[in-house]
Length: 532
Image (cartoon, rainbow, N blue to C red):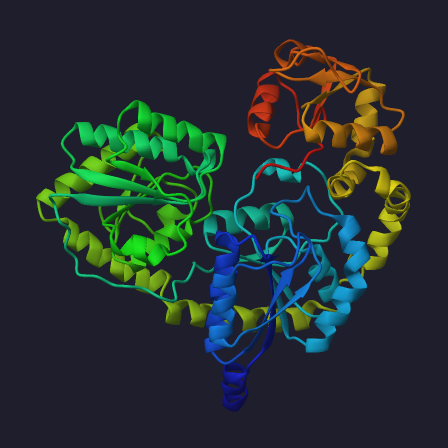
């Protein structure tokens, strides 16, 4: 019995990791990559896969990481999704056999994907290999449709907050393992009070809430704090422009800096004292663990899993909500504690929290234990579920739709965008027809490139659904020979239903529709890519 337990502990696995597209390397991909690096160091055979779904270019800096560590990596074709709506079933069916052949060639023990990867999941089901999904935030809207079950059974999250939510909605076997930081520059617990350097990290967009961070810091400057704030992250959005305008209009260019994407974040952390995280929607911001690893003071909103690690006035500063005023209060609390000599203890407590939650040895042990659990549990249940969805069931369900798409593929303005919505259209088609039978008048909201895509989608796959016109807040006249109407006037009407045909501004459209008591997947449908 003892020998068997020892054998289980030292067994090495072959693990295939399915990352994002080569040019897309965000926090979720980095989290999975760091887990792969840990397993390579632990002696397991690790192979990374990238998808050429959007091309086969890869960032040179990241390629260097794989080569330096001696990690095998390869390209194949699959599509991933951050939510349940935008699954490319055309890509799934067309590339299934190729994906199956490539996975089989490695004879793996485990498959591990970033986000929802139905191709890998279905191959895993056929080959009887357990498949784990890393995925983080969600909104309940994702689950207003009973989708064909192509979703993994095993799920890893970086917060218990969202682990439990995915478990509730998708019935996953969910667990939480925190993000790992494999390299760090630990510093002495001392801060120059004469000029404090603050940093805010992440792409500049609404859910990261940088405008509140900037506003709070401005108020702190006005009330005696002497410091600088640097924002690192892609800054090519309309929201980023709002941040720039605030800085310029308030003459803060010598105090607040938007640096765009920073390839050497270690250098940025090395010259910073305090991290401000203003996020409104995340699972557990990876920047928290990175800043903690580098000895920065943490000031954060109470977003999702952050309160599971950061305790206010103990190992960091936790704002009461997501407002600029709440962040300002915590900046001032930190400033007061710094003057009173209390910050050193907070940093010492943060170091202990890092060791408990994010240190490589800790996460390595947790991950290996989790992998052993998954393999053992899968062996017990793999032959018990006889009703599970397989690739044959998917082909049977979507065969007619995919055949029809193939017949007209070359004639669509953007065939990839059309193909991406077939999964969703299949599941909501009867709801659309039901609304139409009830006398709803359908309008397409959006007169950009997605307006054309959605019009083609409806005309070809739902030819009996008549479009009454387009909605646009800024344009007037006609579009594609249809009248353009003001959305504020039209969505107030009880008999109006809407196809959303925009990504930029999508959240605002949804808010305005819901303010008029319109219900998602009943009164309005999202036929552009889901903004997430």
